[in-house]
Length: 507
Image (tube, rainbow, N blue to C red):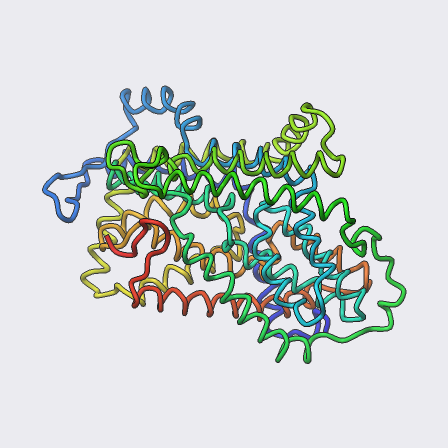
């Protein structure tokens, strides 16, 4: 199937590409919104609203005066340095980057090569979905690995490539473990929640229960769909595949030394995490809350980032020492430095994002907009399931043009989180709805950062693979993920299940 034969789908994809390519860099987008908020604070100065459940009147504060100028200049640096996602992500990526470069995380992913045929499809989904432990690296590692896996078993390698791509890209937000995504989004949600309640705390475990179950549900639904429909209709062996020059490392299974190293590293890191958990759940444990003696909140959840940091350092160090990728202490430092180099663009973009967020909050524009939107929705009786689906679909649509999950959430959270709060829904629930819409269409949009890379991997096996070939296949999986997750959210809502430890749906 080529791009010319896809009809409406090709036109739709082409439209997305044209519109998306006209968007400036995300730095300039948020810089524009930052200055726009400053200007609008002067235009709408004095407009007020009363928060539901309280008598305090909130007014928009103008920044177009001497006092406002003083706040802008004196707080610009501190807004950047205290922005929660900045420190959280850098610390998390320092350790995860070390574990990745030491070989521990790639070794886990490479276990696919030894999986028997009957378990291959579900294994691809589970490992692909959980590959975001290595952040975006999973989207680069998994697809060529699954393509080579299919190729070695005389199955359509391009279909295998796309299967690994949709699992790692569209399944990005789920995991069996707490990953960098949880840390990053929770930091942004926490900042937005404090607009309406300064004492509210959102933890990286906010959606953990839902996301763990998601791994199994998406795997089961995806496996059945793939075996019963997708592979029979979309996967076929082409004679051109016989001439493919497949990189040798993708076809090489783990060595005995790598397997032994992975087992030792997993055991040691697992024991450490189990110890931290036990020190939290035992009555009077040292990692419980020092005042309330509770599990949620507790020192354990407040210190989740340092705990995960040590977890990945232990795993990376023991694996690296066993296989020879880590020979001396400075190797760990060098690997961490390398991982930080990949975060340079993230750090730069955080400057306007952080200042936009705090300026939007300081002027009270975020609160007043949220209050008035919540009031309008109540008058229109647009709450419940209809509202939830609308948030998911809006996020999905925006994701077609702006694929960075954190930047979208940094823009949406200051309005949506307080709005939903005033309607009686927790920030954790709002974050979950966003995550569903954000993740589902990652593999479908051609503006996703790694889409061109996937086309490059596909060309290894077949030279004339076009955008339409990839899009036509990723679209059906994006739709499958979106429908499945939305249905899960509806069921979760009606059953009133907790989203994570101490995280409910309603306030």
